[in-house]
Length: 298
Picture 1 (cartoon, helix red, strand yellow):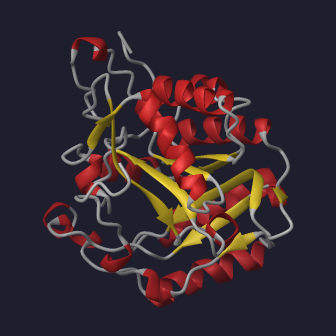
Picture 2 (spheres, helix red, strand yellow):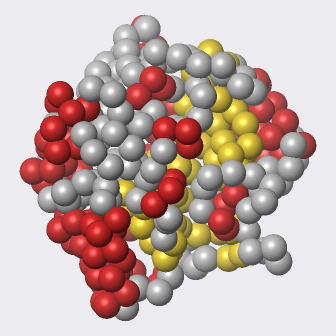
């Protein structure tokens, strides 16, 4: 972190001297904005008990349409120590969590690893889940080998022009391919417990953006032709336009049409995808976005 290259941005700032990352807006100290049971993940992650989510502030991707913008910009949250972070894992377990779901943890990779090791030394026994944008270095994912049980990355773009326009990351497709390949190398098989809750494996999420069915088809085709049913593909329809996004990208100022999502699902079925999750159109609501301002559970 003294010359930070934890993510593909490789901005080289000295976060140990209170410099903030160029994209993650984060320094040395770990900040989290929410730690609570979350019931809106995939069924094999949340179940009925909930996933023990820890939302880290900041994000190395900064998509223009981000639905968690307040935490992505690092404008809310509380600083926590390694010991407090480990305690939070135990508190979520005691509330009945199926797993510990680390959301956008990339830029805090070093302290996250230390907190997991600390918790495991104290006898922690739930699966750890790494919930990220897919914009990861292979080196960072390798550093998590043996510590993370479930990977839950996005695969947002196969078209570089869209990746540039919406995330200023034209290298996103190639970076995400390599990162996901390493995740699957670590966890080539999916395992569920007797309740149907995942304990080991990889789920790759893809969010359909309005007007971009072709990009989504390319993502689904790549994932299926590369990995088949080794992974679960979560095909998401929950895009919700945030206030002001229409001023930046007018085409993103609406929700995804049902006809667009239906075309994507029909395509996935036609090419043979079987191991997948689909969403109902009703999930595209702002009410499904957690309240981060209260810093619940921190």
